Image 1: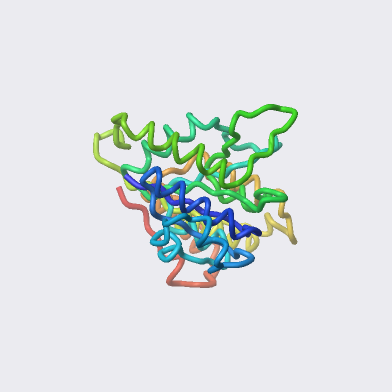
Image 2: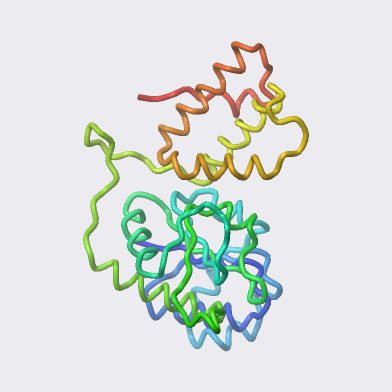
Length: 253
């Protein structure tokens, strides 16, 4: 049972080092960094206090989308209350969900830049959002401290046994990855543009569609069913797919 910690656009290398230290404390090892301002950095090494192996194995990405592409459960931390229509979990609820789903898929916790936190575009890539319960008058936690809270919650909840995800016939289902989900969204956009449902840039509508599908679609099987439906519409309407290899998805039962 493992958990991926993703830090997005971290500005102070000391926070990366402090995160590596607390990850070692709590038995976590997978650290991913999206466009950090400075890494590797001697300040990070000093703050890691011996957790050098975590820093050495840390992976760097250019975008959050690529960092979560193989993840089946992604939870993003936010200090602010947002109007986004996504589940908002407290630290315990988030840890319970991550422990449960980490038995069948790769899970990630995402934390944003120190000054601004995750953007709405970043949060759109998450299945749910996390808000740690703190004093309302001073709600902003240091990013390494927030990661420490969640690493502890995950360790504590890991002691509990949880059921595997199953379908109605009792068979295990494979949870979709965010990479598979992104391909589904792009396929939807392509078909809706070609049918002129999306006339011109309609970012808000696409974001709502993304959230709607993210809440309703969970397994790779369901993704393949929907992509099979889209492909059948393209064929019926004689719409040539832009990428034949990407759109030849058929439903599996």
